[in-house]
Image 1: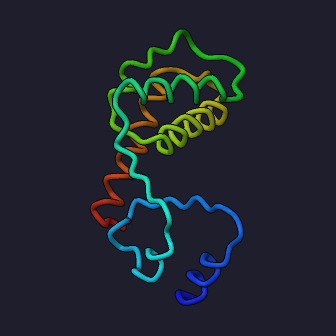
Image 2 (image 1 turned 90 degrees about the vertical axis):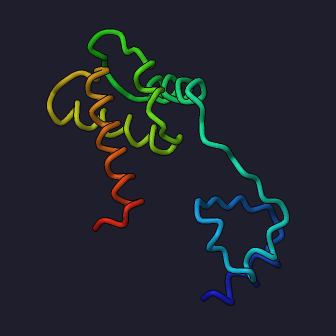
Length: 125
């Protein structure tokens, strides 16, 4: 399989966007076929605030319990995917419990997502 993928990439007629957070493990045969590599820095608090607002604004929810302050949420160093996962988890938990989406529920799911990420980095199973 390793020898097939580089060949497919080399002769692909279009543009492919590939993402990874494991740059150091890219096989040289694969890496030699990459034309442009872009590095994205970790999000700052302002960027996380914007993503939180956009993500919660896109959620299909009937209502929220009061105003949601995104300040505390934006302070937690999550990436965009983790923010999306935390907001979706909060909506699912609210629906499951017949509750409204709240800042407290979002903060709780941020804790769950953060703990899971720490466990993955630590290699816990």
